[in-house]
Image (cartoon, rainbow, N blue to C red; front, top):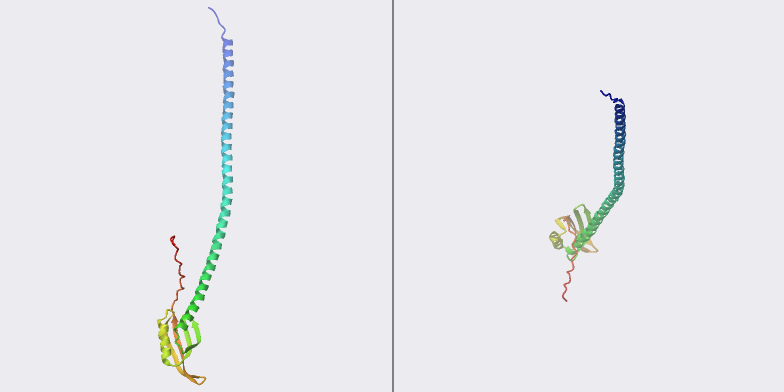
Length: 195
């Protein structure tokens, strides 16, 4: 029988297996290292991208805050302008109202009747004057009642008075003011294309 020594083949196979295992282990470590490097690079890019988005968002927030500040300033200016316009409207109403009331008083007065005093307290008005007779005073009261500026006209006092040798009737009237609307300006008709 022939005897074969298999020990060197086993040792060479063990060496070969050990080399293969070491190679697989090194390749595995390299592959894991490359995978880890790829994951790290991917996360790093995502982090950088997120940081860029955050800085862009912060820049937009600053721009929007500046715009909001401008809008708030415009709102404040708008409130101030609105207050000033309201004041102007009230001044215009105050300017037109007394002028119209006095015009109504003088237009309603018949000839030979003169007004000597006018006082206004809230919506109550008291006027005094002189006339030649009671009929003129009554006519004046009717005219004031019919006007658009006064209502509830009452005769408070009517008495005989003498001025420069002439006998006159001195009177005092009390009345209430009506709400007088400001006149609307007339609009000019638009010109047509035909001439």
